[in-house]
Length: 213
Ligand code: AP5
Image (cartoon, rainbow, N blue to C red; front, side, top):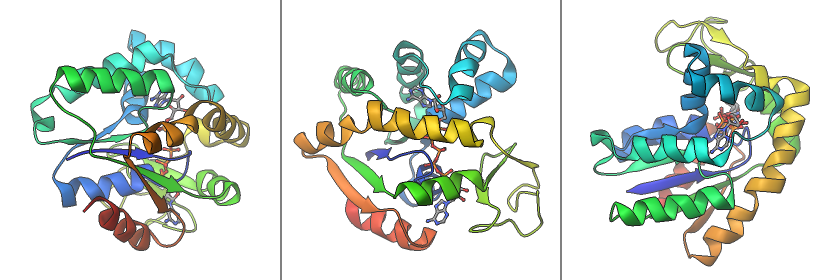
């Protein structure tokens, strides 16, 4: 199954994708995680992406399209994949359609996670992420058992640079301007599955499974 998780920053895409990969036996492809890894390693790509990410702007289309094309050709994507955070512009969505057609594949479902702006800000400002495995926690809603330590692998939890107030506001504006048009784009293609992203992580997970089964 080829799945796409769409939703504003903080909607819970990463949280749900990590659980869904086990249920659906397909890998998560998160462009945000891939770009953060490149920044951490200080590669040329990472150096280019860093300035955009810190400001809450999108990294240029050509950069992320190339990354995703490479990744979808990897052997673990043979029976499907789950895209998290890609596409984010109409140009990326068009490029995805073309690259999948070239590979003889298609998107099966686009899950649009719907969460209001107040909740998004509350989720992002309290988020802490594991440096090693990328698991997201929340200091209030989904705290780790030991403060500052990942339950899964004991990694250190940190606050992302783009989870500071000014960057959060800019990311939400960027989403409305550049990514929201994809809701109509995929609805017109009969692929959109709207899911209420409010409620417990288990409740949202159940709704997604129902929408794609
Ligand atoms: P990216 O890493 O993709 O960030 P994002 O889309 O802004 O999404 P987030 O990771 O912030 O949120 P999420 O929906 O995954 O929520 P999460 O599960 O963590 O992108 C970062 C940057 O990289 C972009 O700004 C851009 O610069 C660049 N980039 C990436 N992809 C790009 C692309 N395709 N094109 C161009 N540039 C690109 O949850 C958030 C919090 O809420 C957590 O604390 C979690 O514990 C909590 N939570 C989750 N679910 C619930 C729930 N049900 N109830 C209560 N709390 C919950």
